[in-house]
Length: 179
Image (cartoon, rainbow, N blue to C red; front, side, top):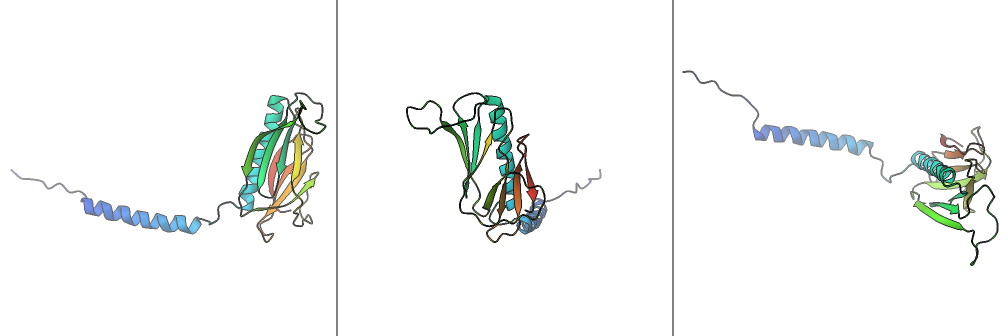
């Protein structure tokens, strides 16, 4: 009777192949990884998403919502009263209508908000300067409309300019490259 030899891989051979694949993937991930986390593009997209969330909350709860951008934070608040009547007055106790904090999102420290501008600038090439006078507010009505505006962001040197646009009539927000 003749015996046949079974051929296969040894454990050592399999471990060598896995090690080679691991080393190659480490080089690929290391080459594509950008240290520091967020870029102006991803932060602009994050702001557009947060503005869209603010709009959807205003419509679904039938309350005015205010989205405030500071140098390093995005704060969402809602007016305590329901309806289309514009919020007014100061909120000191025992006032019944006040702005109520919904959420506060910290923005990445590698991206800087350069300026907030009322109204929407569609064309590129805006003259934007570094503004330390933030915060910048955009209010959303219960019907979805907003006060509108543009948020300009970039790195600390003003490179990689991006902006987040919020339209007045629809309240829709989008991230766009350039100023």
